[in-house]
Length: 218
Image 1 (tube, rainbow, N blue to C red):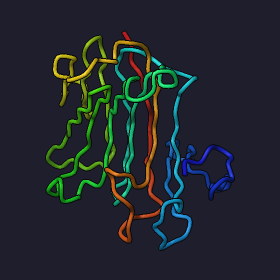
Image 2: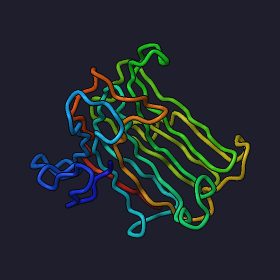
Image 3: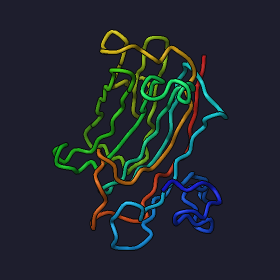
Image 4: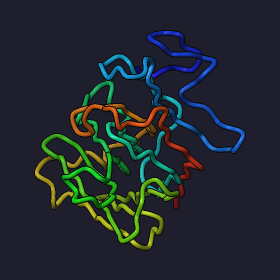
């Protein structure tokens, strides 16, 4: 359950919010287990923040400095959706995942920690992983995207060190990313088909810490 601010629905607790700015000055996005030892759907709360209807942009460089949870079933994401989501639907509206992460120690990644940037559109699903010696998503890192007409570039920490460049020519479907502005989302999902369900090794509470989100335009 993604808990809205002040909500008491479905286990949400306004006195223990899932999204808040702490005395440390960081935004905390926190996942909780309502009943310890129970791993069924519906026993978890978290938060999703979005700028839909409040702020959107087209083109520029956007980045967020974050510290991520590393635990089975945790799925933090920093991403964007087209403003036409309500009318065109997904994936036609276009989705840009600046950063997604699931447990870096899962067997499918040979024990190497990593994050992934992905674009989605009609007939498009292109995910590219980033990893580097000594990289840990549990440390502070800056995850960013440089968005220009006909091109999306992804980087970690240094915008001069792009790890993926994505263009329409490399895609199998229509390119939706020059069609209008997109809004911003930050969230911590629990479970899901990619991250898998939490289990007895999962740490609760788990949280994303966000130092800032910044947009640079020309």
